[in-house]
Amino acid sequence: MPYWMTPEIIIAISSIFIALLALAATIWQGKMTKKHNKLSVKPILNCRVEISKHCEKIGVHFTNDGIGPAIITSAKISKNDQEFSLGDYRYLGLFPELMNEHFHFTLLGIPGSLLPSESQWLFSTSEHKKGLVEINDLTSALNGVSFEIKYESIYEDKFSFSRKIEPPQ
Image (cartoon, rainbow, N blue to C red; front, side, top):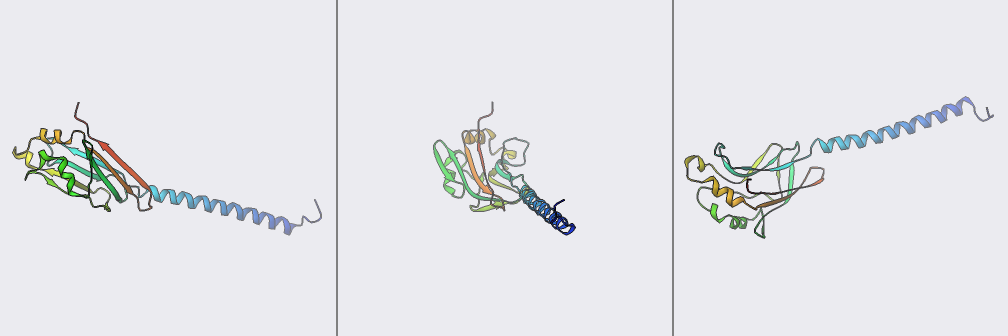
């Protein structure tokens, strides 16, 4: 052993090595905790089209199937080369066949949010149960409609949802 390798030097070098390992483990654990926290509040937007005579309501609604709030930053609807914001009632012009007293239309709040398990109807009716609305009218009105929604998590991670409604086969 060299003359400078005293027990005190060996203990000091060992202490530095252990401290560096502890620092590396702490940094790794912090990154894993942050990743876990982001995943534990990840929103997942979905669009549901209800067109069955067995449903209480028929229409289109958006749901947050994730476990964190979805902060909606933009939402668009398009059909036949026309595009509108879902925060603007002009989108109703895409559905002239549904413009009657039986359908209820709403706007998505932009910017706005959907909480976990929360649902918001874009348009709906329950009058199909009374025979006042034909399900085929809704099906034909939705043919070729596309939605594009951009949203964020509370950690400002950006997500996008898009869906085009095709006629049933």
